[in-house]
Length: 222
Image 1 (tube, rainbow, N blue to C red):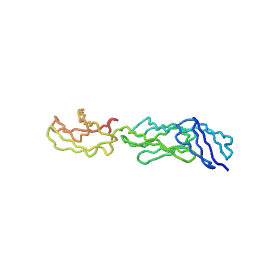
Image 2: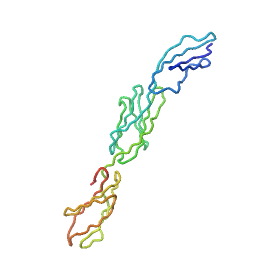
Image 3: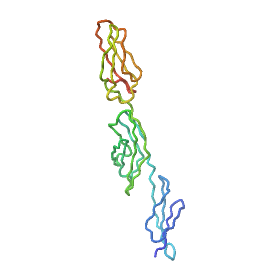
Image 4: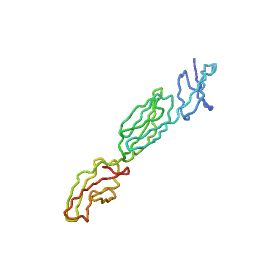
């Protein structure tokens, strides 16, 4: 009867397993490292010949984020040809499966501007186990905002008028500036998210066209 099984792997680690064991998991190995493994069984008379095999551990799954845009980011990871497919998940619980032919990169699209995302990559090992990468945080770039809404004129006098407005329904980032222009060609830039301004020095009984737009870090909207 088999009394013991001896498993040895480089560099010189040996374990003796009691009885007729037919499997063992080696823990504490280094990533992306080749190991030589020898196995032999023993009866009361001693150990028989050693059987040799070898394996290479998988590298640590490392994820990078490149080409950050307002509505897309490119995800890059260290692809291993032994992995059949990957799964990418980002913070609002959306996910996509990527097969190994993509060779370690995928572009997430239809993202929201100026939004924080936490991105993780999951790889599926051939034996059925899975492993997640460490999450990588990314903030998409701002985009130009939409048009302002609810423009109102009030407090008219012979030389001034007050204008009020509301910010766009979609700002696509923090509002940095507001541009107010009135004929004939006068423009003023207001710092921050201003929602009112009084025009002074106007001519009596004169029609004026007024345009207003807001800006994020990406520039002015309509």
